[in-house]
Image 1 (cartoon, one colour):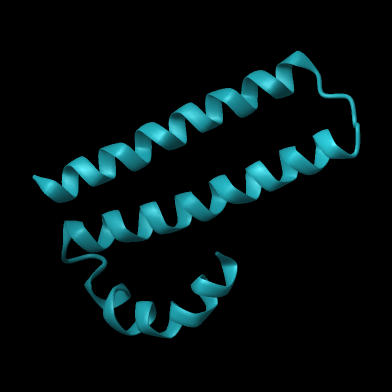
Image 2 (cartoon, helix red, strand yellow):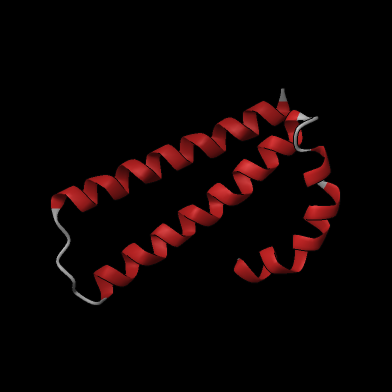
Length: 84
C-alpha cells in the first residue's frame, strides 16, 4: 500500500492537488486516500502490540474499535458523496 502511494505521488501532485481548492471530488479523494493510510498505520501498530504480547488495556482496545468505526463511516460517507 505504501509503495502504491509512492508510485503515484507525482501523478497525484500533478493532477489532484491543483484542483484541491476548486472541486469537491479532489477534496474527497485526498481525505480518503490519506485516511486509509492512517487507518492502516494504526492497524499495523495495534497488530504489532498484540503479537509482541504487550498488554493492551481496555481503554486502548476501545480507542482502536472506535477509530475503526469512525474510519469506516468516513470512507463510506466519501463513497456516498462521490456517487451523489
